[in-house]
Image (cartoon, rainbow, N blue to C red; front, side):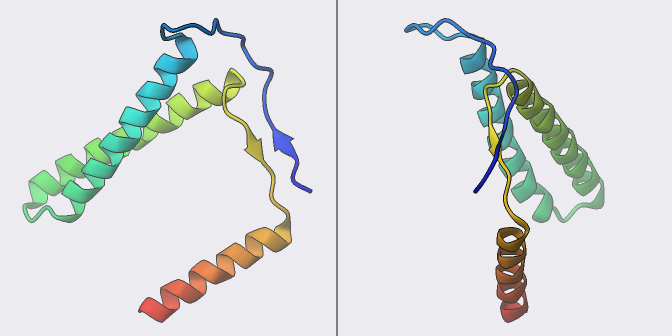
Length: 103
């Protein structure tokens, strides 16, 4: 059975206006969208200098998104579940097989 990993939740006021959790979740959502866009731009960049710039922007955005996720997690607004080794190995094998079939 999966075990939930979480921190104590910081309570926020629930109302029709945005609270701290809502704002931080919106920031994370935007950072994820930016990372996807930068990933696309980076992979399709033909100019080496622009490729380096886009790569740095992508990396910086990923770091900021991770930091934002950590804020949500530390405040108890995001919970994780552990997976047993069998499930992890099964998933890894499935992705490895899929990757090898495509190559």
